[in-house]
Image (cartoon, rainbow, N blue to C red; front, side):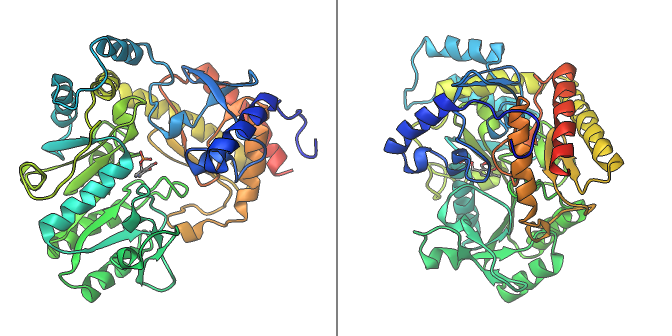
Length: 438
Ligand code: PLP
């Protein structure tokens, strides 16, 4: 026990399962972050989730702040979602033909959201973003896109690029296997940098189809932007007849029912949504005005399709979840509960003069080992601070608290986290902070 005063949790069964998984999957996983490369120990193999709790294969119990990376805003195994899915499954799983459920979910979304008029369901956030970019290119008849360093938009080729140095740079791929020609169409800019956006529009006049941003960048820490910057993007897109895409795969239905668009009251041209609208099942979507969406096949010439898009089971999960989210007071209660939780942690850290900040929006939070008041760009994150997260992660697991296994990832509070759960988590976090800053 080199650091903490608690023994490490037993991971024997997880280790056994990991060895087996390594025989079948690259790195033993089906999505890289799950391999626990940035934290201590064997990846935990999860056996069960209920409410805000998770149990791994060794029987360790955790209060879960990962919530399957966000979608489980009502917690695990929510009875209404389960009931609805089982009810719909009685009639078959997929038909490759329209069902009334698709319109039911679309109606729920669109009636409560003034930013989009029509929507198309996909099976993942990646697909939604890929299709939104194609739509923007199809509408504007231009090829280049602007994205921001530190924003993740799924693993579609044109978006897996990062910035080089300089004010405006062409993308450099962050994965092998992406043709340079694709990356060359992607201009990568630092977040919160109006001058760089302006320079890009000047340099590539009439060539930029769209600007895509996570309005709440939550994949590289939580890089909360000034509203003023997002508003500037709206204006410069209008001036240049480019489309503004808000990638709300994380923020949509999370910071409020109408997502970051509603939170900041900025109307993007296209919004992408993800996992949360499936209640835990694989769903994504993109939406826009009826005029923009009329360009999508079969109405228009921008092709996009999916065998399992809008499948009844995923729609059922979404309908059950979003019905709960649309109820009066849902977000106020969840956001206030999260605010109380993160404020208490911040107060504790500040009282001990720890170099530690909790950033929060709605029910999303991020632990940053910094003394900066604002962290708005990926360059502002000191990679060395991740060592502290690594230790914190292990000590939290030892105290029954589960955070996503990377210091660049955000945490989520769900409606299933009770005051008592949050109290318990807070105490564990205080202890871990004391260990990390010992
Ligand atoms: N866009 C954002 C903002 C995301 O956070 C993610 C995934 O986390 C995606 C797109 C891709 O979604 P998916 O993993 O469902 O393909």
